[in-house]
Length: 171
Image 1 (spheres, helix red, strand yellow):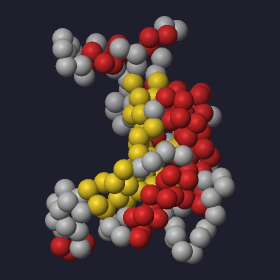
Image 2 (tube, one colour):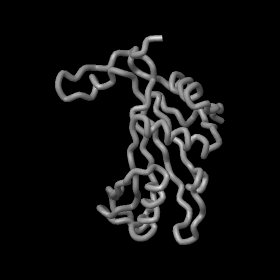
Image 3 (cartoon, helix red, strand yellow):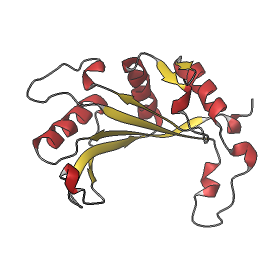
């Protein structure tokens, strides 16, 4: 197979939505730092939602982006936390996929602490092929050729082969 056509991981974004600032947000940041060994950044509310008690500009979550070898190592652990199963419905038409971990205690080495609580997280994985930059670069931007675009089935096959994840049919 052509090396330039092999799928690869562009980035992995791990997000914990808390819905409020304060101690719970600090606890969520601590959990993310323990799991990934990286410093997270805060997610800021874009709108004011009075029904949820959210004001525009207020920090309401925390997230971080992983790339390269770190992203692959994190994904191996994250797939184990969800039982090495993903649904076909979690993949989009462009080959990206997302899944959630219900409790941070599912990760190895993480224990329940009553002072911190339990946090779930969303994990979004952006996939690409080599040469993807031509569609995003600032100078001499071009349309991505059809053979360079990823699709759902190619990503599902890649995840199954590389990580041993079982893909379940969407119900």
